[in-house]
Length: 275
Length: 312
Image (cartoon, rainbow over all chains, first blue to last red; front, side):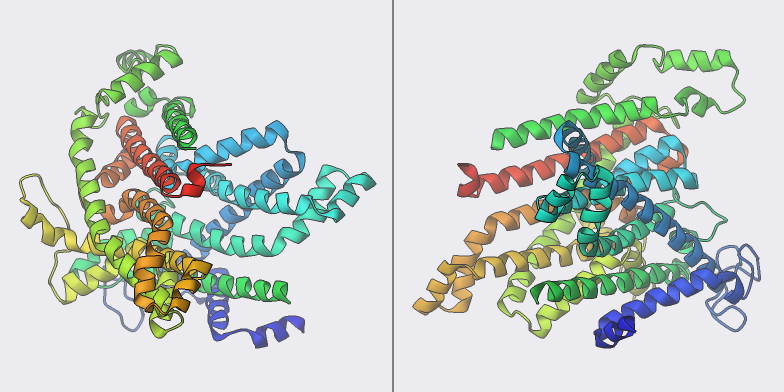
């Protein structure tokens, strides 16, 4: 019930954001049920215009664009979610650990992160992927590791502020170990900013995978994904067919939705703190 | 302070070159095998390793590579055997040209609009800026690029959708081809710059000496230009240079959309072809430009801020 109360007080922008995200998640989960055709199925001529039978037209191989869009939601969103979760697991545990332990581990890890962050992310990813090749596990590992440097920074800073509080001191004196302090003392108190950060990192990862797929080095065809669909259909735009714009707009739509929720969440937690 | 920052920048650059070199070496997938494919005999692989000097010890190869690199000898492309320097030199100048022209458009625009937004805070104009910032951080670059193509080159037929400039073209022949990529880049960075400039000016405006000036009865426009702006200059310079660094790197996707012959486009091509020397060289150039611009931003903000210049 508390959740519905919060929802009732939410501004219209947050409701739009929630609606967009919920819609995308539902499409991603139920893609095989609601898609009119199969993922790799060729249903007609190439680049047919919008009409009955294929509401958004067909792509460069004559596959139904709406079907591809539904399956693309599934592949792109789930991949971005896996990467963001992994990046948070690495970043938070690293950041909290060095904040609690300190000393040379902190020095070494923080300097490595400094160097990695001095590198432009896309360029670094391009270089690593050129050597390791573009398979899904490599993609997940590389992006998660690169992204975790940002999470590490913020969770280390948060943990540094929290670990000097009295209740952490008490826990340490009580004889609790590092793992307990990280999980039971620091994590709950660092959660609100981390959740907001998660929304933003998800957007970043999502845009990043889409950009890589668009450049042809992300998710490989015939798997449907939004960035790749823009790339495949790019040629159509010179004939005045708007098919590359649909997946691109879908990406923009979802990131706007997540950002609207993050904004709402940030202003809400600022209000609670001000009280 | 400045020396310390410069030192850190230098160390970063050295580590980056070492990382790029080692990354190529240490990661699985032997270069010689990768070029020759699965069917290669051990003898041909060994011969190619010798030709690529892969049989020498690691540190020797690193220093040879580094000294070659600093002399402009970037090795040869694996795909077509041409010298890398020849391939990417011209393209790097194209990339810089595109980034510079986007900067020429976006920096003054961001300054003016950011100041106006700070002046008319909470007006419809101000709100429009925060909405457009949301758009700029949420939209993928190619969405903006293809939307512009759909409008300007498909519907209105004003500008071409492909920016295939060549060396033979004069400056004025290049300009119409460059407008759409330049406009896209401007869209991508403008909102962010505007917002940062607005935030710095509002920050300065809330300080006591501005209140003093207001109490003296000075006009708001004069306060902004004569009192607030000089004090906001250092953070603004910082924001602008950071965005320039972002511009140089952010062009990659946009170059691919418009088939613009820049460094980013050849880098992406070479990644697909696994043409490691080209990837290595263009990656290094991108990384160095990015690090150097960030370094400039930090050094300038130390120099323009008296409090940072003489630390206690």
